[in-house]
Length: 159
View 1 (tube, rainbow, N blue to C red):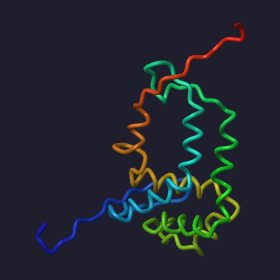
View 2 (view 1 turned 45 degrees about the horizontal axis):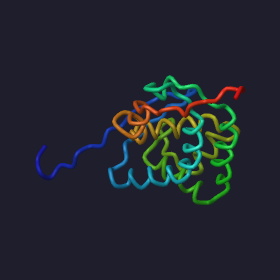
View 3 (view 1 turned 45 degrees about the vertical axis):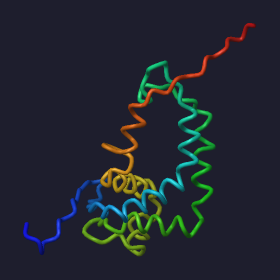
View 4 (view 1 turned 90 degrees about the vertical axis):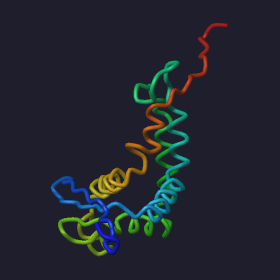
């Protein structure tokens, strides 16, 4: 590569429920902004979910038991913000470097492709997050997955 050529950003492809997605990774500084906005949205819910984990001493989070009573409040924490225009803009920004079936993921395309099928929309968001390594390989996700979270001693029903 000579000094006038710009490096090419990596693009990954994936078929999700019959739709073909292509996502080009974000430039670093833009990606950090998107990641920060995602964390503001899901961070409080992640906190309560992590508190619902119960690991054995020295165990990995991946092998933990999960307190199912925290799932409802965690989901409510996230969905409380779905009607916020900032969330809609965040979703559009998340898809700013993504194509579905060869088309840029503009609002009109999303309105048609995902009408009545939000599950694919959520899976596509996860694909973009994975492609950009926001919480996966080599990121916070690895740190969390390998973390040893000690459990608090439990008391039995007898005193």
